[in-house]
Length: 461
Ligand code: NAD
Image (cartoon, rainbow, N blue to C red; front, top):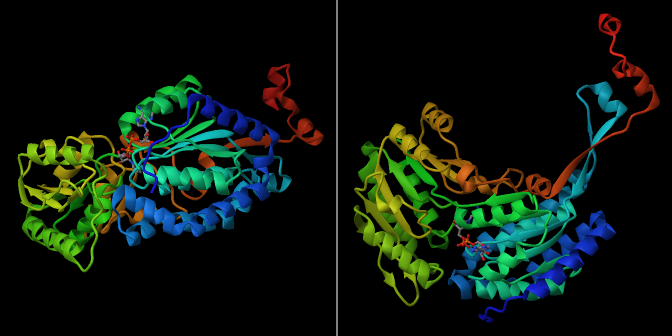
């Protein structure tokens, strides 16, 4: 496994960019046949190299193959098929008009133009999915793209560099390996769109660099996604779902449950069942727990556990070398506990005793989260929570599922980001919607009243 970071030089990056700009100017990437060909090539990239990709993810994150298959690979495959099935409809001109007659006359339409040469920057937690999924949307829209995966997932980054060169049109799609200084140089180039997945702090740097060229950005950021468990909730289901969210990728998911607000009436039973499910998932037959990505994050998580004023009722131990942490449950903490000061991004679950109103107040004190999870069987309570909070998306009585609907927009709001992708929303993120009005002679006569002189007689008519 290639675990050595080798970054492209500033000159190489500049050359790639120039090649892509020239390619886009030829108009070839606008051709639907080219777009479909590249989507199919992407399919074969994944299909032919499935084992190599699974091995690379294992080398970077020590994640089980089944988990990687379900998360990174299945999503990419599903998306390619969905985009191939819909590309003709999405790319077709849309006739606009408020009335039947206006639509029949077809005077105005929306033409979907690819934005141009775009930059896609990914995070390490789903090192393959988070660059290839936006790339599917960029290709479908007819863009050229530079992809910059996270340098933290070295094996995946190096493998993807080889595969992208081998399978995709190198005059239109390039992968660049870069650390922070190289990415800073990369961001000096003029792109027509930047699609960024990562932390809010880095997102600010990206937005600032993009502003120099007035480049539009999509910000897929993280945050502290909470779960609210009301007194009417199916507690067993809530405990199992939340244990699962913290287990998957060792809680290193933007959509994971960061912390839980649980009503006092069901608090104790929830904490008990959460520990039960943690133990089931952890000690089940041949279970493999994903590692914490590196020593820096490993130390950060132990630092958070050390600082909390709450009580660690289970878990929180781990092996320094393998960086696998037993899922931790922390109780008896208040709303301002240090554990809630940042996105945890690991298998630590703070449980706060709070009713629904207190939970909503606390949520509204911070940035809008990427996801909100509501466990309740009371429809008016659910409605009330929806009315009084905001978040990128919501799953009711489960976790993460809202992000898996192919036709639904995925994105944050406020501190968790802006812009969307998945399905038609990704296509639109990489497209300019160009309104075209074609005015026939009779139409000019019909609206001739618009010409001066603007006499009072005209108004009377
Ligand atoms: P990160 O922000 O540290 O890095 C993301 C990317 O930015 C990497 O490719 C990195 O090389 C690059 N980068 C880092 N510092 C940079 C700088 N100063 N200038 C330019 N580029 C820089 O994020 P991460 O640690 O890779 O990922 C974790 C974060 O991503 C979490 O906050 C998580 O919630 C979020 N995330 C969000 C989504 C989503 O879809 N909304 C998905 C996955 C992860």
